[in-house]
Length: 477
Ligand code: HEC
Ligand code: HEC
Ligand code: HEC
Ligand code: HEC
Ligand code: HEC
Image (cartoon, rainbow, N blue to C red; front, side, top):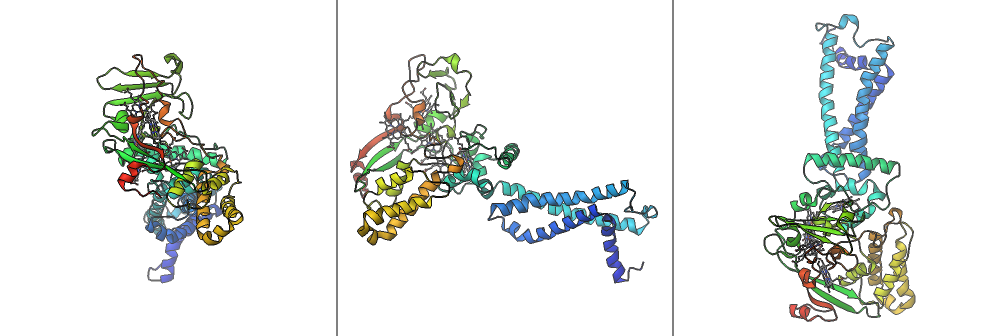
């Protein structure tokens, strides 16, 4: 065999391949590996750009593809093994099994080079797979139906630029592994269609919020009071508006006790035992402060020995902020906010009343267009003059009303108005008053305060033209 002959040089490159695929199982393996390598080359641009626009494309590229690749690789030795057991042709003929024989050297060289290439391809694909499974596109989009309520609320929240994993997994390898294992369990639930509807909350194995939230917000930081203006619209012809103005005592660990300081100050720990799965009924609360004896507060007619069986939980951010990003509306508040910020036109007669009636009706999954159609129809039939003049504004309001509905109602997942209670506040859900109800008493007779101004100064309550806003130069319109 002369090395000057180009044909035989090509031959000598191919011979190991031919030798390795003398049976159809190994041949299939070689074929699969080659095909995946070609796909991989086409995928390179996507991998360099770092993002996959469609979750299914991502699953295909980074989850299915590495699996097929590995399968193909394993087929090659499997075929050789089967062949050998059947007494078929050997990779190396007896005479070739010595280092001085060029066939053995070619084969070893070929396998060496192929292994390096395979390691590069496989490690890139799996690295990408892990990365991709941490992306918001995968978490929110891949199991489309299951995650649709959480994804929709997330996209419309102050955290819509924070990746799911930053709250759900946080830094560190241990939690990453834990999350992947629980993720696999969830994938099976989706495949076998045995997942709960709605997705249960609270999430019992959520990473303690102080490891996640505090990466971006830390309790010492919230020091100042914050003014909140809440606008409400009546169901009359002019949608007459009233406003409440609250000075929230946000507080913080160092600056001022306030809301955050009271529960999260250094050295203070508050623990509680909820009597129900949603943590809405709290019969037992304990506050400990370094250097002081613990204070236990018991709800009305509660005996300490009766509550021992309930979960014991240390209070952190999500006991109040349980909806920091998956924030759902109630119809009234959702529409009020849209009217207040101009997504819906508050000058349209009976806009609030009509909108409220429309969104409270039930529509089938995916039929949210009926919501906007009903709102447009209301004006077309009842106020044709206004409709003619303000068609664009009515249609825009209708579209925003539809969006409110679509963000909150998911018949497939059995999520509707009020499915997920929000623990901030005390008007729509028990919230702060789960503990601050003046009924939780310590042995000394001390209660967990319900004093209105401990949490906020009420500068105005449902007033037409609050003086404090006029003083601020706020134009009431
Ligand atoms: C700002 C932090 C944050 C981000 C970002 C975030 N979540 Fe959550 N999520 C939470 C918290 C906190 C809970 C727990 C609520 C509870 O225990 O009541 C939760 C709960 C959930 C639940 C359980 C059902 C429910 O509504 O309580 C699912 C499912 C979920 N998140 C999915 C996602 C997905 C998918 C994304 C990304 C698209 C995401 N989350 C982004 C904080 C976050
Ligand atoms: C990766 C950073 C990051 C993480 C992690 C994070 N947040 Fe935030 N958070 C933000 C940003 C950014 C904003 C928006 C700030 C703004 O709009 O001024 C925000 C806003 C908020 C707000 C104010 C919302 C409002 O209406 O003004 C609250 C409350 C909040 N986060 C709570 C939490 C809680 C609770 C967690 C943990 C479950 C958490 N955040 C985790 C970055 C983060
Ligand atoms: C006892 C309940 C409670 C706990 C615990 C709690 N918060 Fe808050 N937080 C509130 C309330 C109430 C507000 C004011 C909400 C409002 O103005 O509507 C608030 C406001 C905030 C804001 C907005 C601050 C601003 O100045 O606008 C952020 C950010 C925040 N919390 C993050 C956190 C983080 C992170 C944790 C955990 C370290 C946490 N909170 C723990 C009740 C709590
Ligand atoms: C799990 C029970 C629990 C929940 C829920 C809870 N708190 Fe508290 N809160 C306590 C305890 C316990 C204390 C400390 C009482 C004491 O001084 O011994 C406290 C103290 C406070 C204080 C200080 C009161 C004072 O007089 O100094 C404020 C302000 C406060 N909480 C605000 C809130 C707000 C706002 C919410 C809802 C977002 C809330 N808390 C939810 C248990 C709770
Ligand atoms: C333990 C803390 C706490 C106590 C005590 C408390 N509140 Fe509140 N309240 C809140 C929080 C937190 C909110 C803000 C909710 C939000 O962010 O929308 C709120 C909101 C409100 C609002 C505006 C909500 C709306 O939708 O109109 C009113 C009005 C109000 N409180 C009245 C009172 C009155 C009256 C008392 C005294 C009986 C009281 N609160 C006691 C924590 C408290």
